[in-house]
Image 1 (cartoon, rainbow over the protein chains, first blue to last red):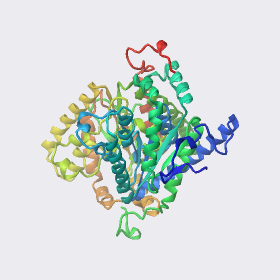
Image 2 (image 1 turned 45 degrees about the vertical axis):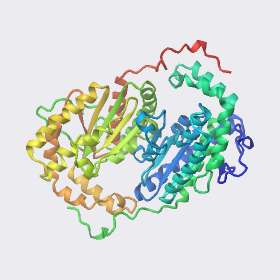
Image 3 (image 1 turned 90 degrees about the horizontal axis):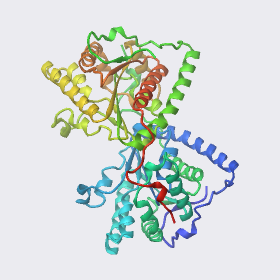
Image 4 (image 1 turned 60 degrees about the horizontal axis):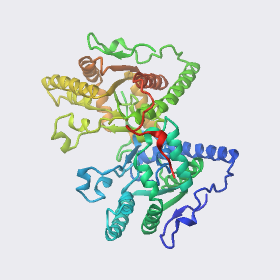
Length: 272
Length: 272
């Protein structure tokens, strides 16, 4: 696995990352099949790791998914989180904020959705929208964005210090790939429900989004809450990379079998 | 599939249901394997049905899981909901109410967790605990319980009238089966985290729980929010029965491909 993790924002540039890349896997049907088989093995490991996370209830995992429209946030959840126990997994999709949410600081609605001990939490979009879409459209000043970068870093540090592993993924697609995916969304009646009138307008702001992402990733990549730049033009490679990092993160916790409730002498219990 | 649905509480008795039953499946390794293969087929259908539910976002499904300790509520979620997209599925586990929850009516904390349009909601325990554990321990009067039965019926009717399919499952195990499962929980270090000091005390109240369940099921079985008495001594048969009913409920909605956003002429969209 190539190093996709960004743990420091110094000299970060998205141009250095190829959205079409597939690492050690060939860009052929064979490469794709091998990647899919490897992903399936990772997902099988995920179930056991999640159960141990849930049983211990001492740590948690937060997965943040960001990327341009059609970059595959929904597809990543469907394909990588297939097989996790929904009892220990919560997905929060952040859409246009409500009036009540806008009447609070931008982290308020996000903080309420962070995973409790034992859980995997997935953010489909996140607090990063408040330094991305808001910035590209000029709804917030540069000074506000700069302040928010610091607020985000401190918020994620709080989560880390409380035992939450924070994994942030930028699903990196090319502008040409987005065109194909939007066209597929229009052409396939089964996909039309995902069409959003704003998709076309947002696409015109592509360069602004690239800049906003570069700045956000530069400003908020830390050792404890790294970004991962996932080559996402090929869905099968995207799924593999995300699965690999999720499994790695859970394994790094080195959780043991949960000891069970304290002070119970299991040898003395008799059930009648 | 035998008729496990209870749509009217008249003359209901739990004794008429055999917790050890396996329907048309033999109680052999062969029968078990066949049931597991059939369950896998049902689960594969579930993913597509859920996606259509999510895409249309016009209806929702609420699954209520109740049963004695060790009856398999967690296992049912893990084994049957394996493969659903966690983005469209929310599990709410109702434990001892908090002070804030107790300061409200008993349906308050439950109402907040009902699935929105497009979602599958799973209640691991539910509002029924307020006419079960509370009653068996004498924390509430019979008059309160009787009033709550009506309140529950009206609450579930509200959900039904709003487009939520309400499926209630009683996972039916025998007292002997519970003994074995509690012993397994003690014996296996991987399962000890599930041990609860109250498990032994609750077991002593078995007969009281049977009576409380009979009364609750009698009082709250309706056409629109039926109970299903699931033979649950054999986990593989329990999973099959629940999967079958969930798939049937989603299919009965006859959801078509979502038309997508209104007023969009997809033939006129050009992506540049």
